[in-house]
Amino acid sequence: MELHYTSRSLRRRRNTDQWECSLSHVNPATGETIRTYHTLVAKTQKQAEKARDALIVRLELEGGAVGMGMPLREFLNAFLRYKEESGTIEPSTVRSYRGEVKQICAYLGNVSLDELSVGDVNKWMSDMTADGYAPKSVDKPFRLLKQALKWGMSQDLIRKNVCDYCKPPKRVKTPINALNREDRTRMLKLAIAAEAESPLGLAIELALTTGMRRGEVCALRWSDFDEKGTITVSHALGNGPGGFYLKEPKTGSSARTIPLTRHTAAVLKAKRSDTWRVMGEMGVDPGDPYILGTQVPESRPYNPTQLGKDFAAFCKMNRFDCTFHDLRHTFATMMIGNGCDVRTVASYLGHASVSITLDIYADVDPEKPPS
Image 1 (cartoon, rainbow, N blue to C red):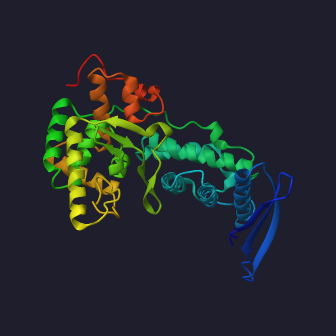
Image 2: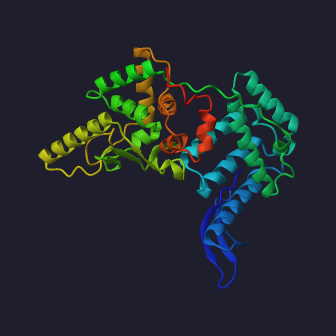
């Protein structure tokens, strides 16, 4: 039966790097709550908290498994719990990790941690490939398993990381799917015509003319809009285990200010004026609503999942073959094809470095305008 430990206190012993950590757990046989005390060594509060979290997971692993015969499924779930409780990863990353653990466990979940071999890992990746998974879809769970086993070594649960001796399938770079000039123009016209009826139209216009990601578009508030003609990306909506939540941009460079086209700026200015006028007539302080959300003080954003579904329906109806993210690619290829400096394009896209932009759009000829 598994034991679950709860942190009760963590305090530093005066003038030392030793910390006293108090934990409690329930005796599964008697139901009695038992409190235990442990000494940790750390220079800072943050380091002490990490050491405490690692101690909890180690104790739970030792208490919940019979020797080293622990199934890989239990080990990976304990690793996920450790990562989630450490607070070092975003809820959206937790959600992604859970999906990858599910993929691993579908093939290796019942293999004992101490018996996991190089052959098991190689066969798992081969089986995933045979089942139709792309190299990228095999590589991501492989990297997570490698990270988990490295942590297992740090906890003295295993002596070697078998993933160090394996290679995932080589990733094949897939061509980006960007709209040509004709389809971009047609889509933009259709989007503009639909703006009065649905937030989808404005979402499409923003993506095509700024290159913002779906979660960034949905997270825009009126305070991010400057009537001088710019929009600032200050937040994004992430998808975590409990649904969507407001988070900081993907990287430090993702927080950025992007110039708007005259039409987009005029549309936003008129929309904001309408919101302020209606709120004023109601005698209500508008606050800072989401641009694409409900125009009330307690504004709700346009759900990114719903945006994806609405866009898919829009494409099917109008015979476009692309995803919402492809509008970001369309923006980038149009900018580069029209002679814009790659460094400027990278800054608008929020890439951490120009090399990322060059790698993704290496096949775009800056001397040849998009067809």
